Length: 140
Image (tube, rainbow, N blue to C red; front, side, top):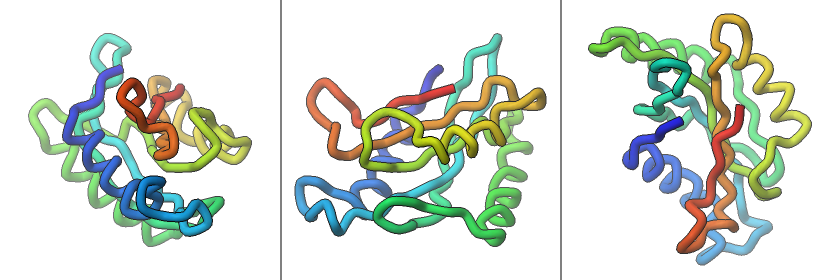
């Protein structure tokens, strides 16, 4: 898997706006969710685009029907790129480390299926950012 630096920076900016362990109390943290765009080359997912979809609560973030409409519109712009891209997965922040929660596993099963076997989920925990840790992990 590969992720463009500007994708990481946009996700980090969104996450740290709502959950900055250097400036905020943990009880003020809010989760953020979005979509990842890119393409798959020889089984390798390349993440080239990011869409920030929604800010949730302190322990969960849920997408509403309007967010899926926005996602479809955003994905239509990916299709016309050269080479064409598509939504390769999703991302969100949470504050339980580099792992999917039980709900996340169920959500990811909606992404990773026969039509998109290389789908990825990026989990960003801002509390883990350090010189040696970018704060995120990409899971399949």
